[in-house]
Length: 537
Ligand code: PEP
Ligand code: MG
Image 1 (cartoon, rainbow, N blue to C red):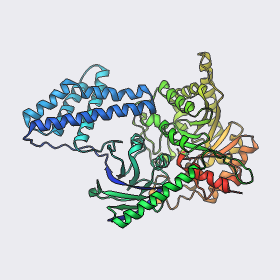
Image 2: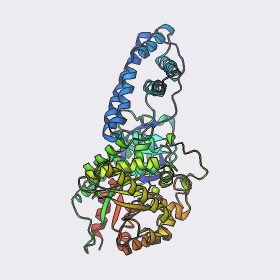
Image 3: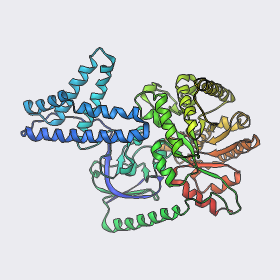
């Protein structure tokens, strides 16, 4: 038995098999096999499994990103069934007596090169697909791994680090917990863990021989126990039972109002990063969606998502939420959220760099596509739009001009749009300080305390070494929140918090006293915040 301590990201107890997740590419070695029939059978089984995975990915993507994006997985499945590819693998195994991994890797290289040398751009592009399917089969032959692939069994995922794009691809029904060596508690991967309501720890180094062993994640105490002795395991089974019971008690709060004993009400909304999170939004009885991070559409694509793809994703969310408010934040890419096809380049200070609204205002074609999709989707529910990383009135006026021209363009095309509130995130000290002026320009403020804390305290939220210094309770941050709330109310607009601080129940009473109108938190935190609101005077 081994016990290690790390930093808590999301509470909860998980008990299950450890799966070491590695994003390193599979290294294939050539080896000689005696039983070629058995090796061909091994290949065929891996191929079948890969096709099964691809069909599963198609179904998942269909729900999360729409048919057009999902189709790629069907194409990959068809490529794996291709006779030439299969024949090449079979021949190599039987004629050269080589292992399946080597035969697949060589076939993949040959086919990828053949496609890359073709004149036609369409066929050229298929080269990347061949590499992708080849890697998938090799991964299966090597026994798992791969980007976002966490295998078929429920598991505690232990990794060096996880990128947001990998995390979103993981099959949430198989994720018992996350444990990573790197990462910080304010990174987007940590936020995703909270959104999914999955126990998570960071700052825990791991050993290769942990794979397959039983692990216990104690997200409350920040403990990770490997290969527990029987009494410890029994103790944790009991703790897990009690924890599940507590969660069931919280469920009694479903359907209840967010109202204090003296009758003060506050809206309690959910933060999501993916339409797949809607299940937990509904399960946890959120009053609406206070922050829908639209980046998932860009992170999961290999190219800019089209207007139609975006429209379908937004429409699905507003339709699912019925008449409840859905605040969709426009693209906030850059800093820790890198997308290759944006070609953002390396920056010395990415958090202070080319990101979010700065990209949208300098590359209006990307911004207009997203706005068209959002306004079109607004006809199907209660959609609001929010703009991130604002620092000036001038920016807001430019945004409003673009937004107006997009609405006019849609009207000229005869496309219906709904009533759309347009607000901004207050996540820079500059925006907080001039919030009196900004309030005259917009319909609402949503305070992004994750970035507001980072920029106010000059603490990189991604830097794990600085976690102890990242104090979101710092009086400077709290004063800015109060100031933003007061300035909003003076201008007759509402103000809420959508950063992680909104879920900090030690501050719920403070936020109520400040007069905030809304708190938007991870779906798994809604009921515990509601409990504190209902117990407040
Ligand atoms: C924030 O900065 O508080 C916020 C909600 O935005 P994100 O965490 O996505 O940067
Ligand atoms: Mg932010």
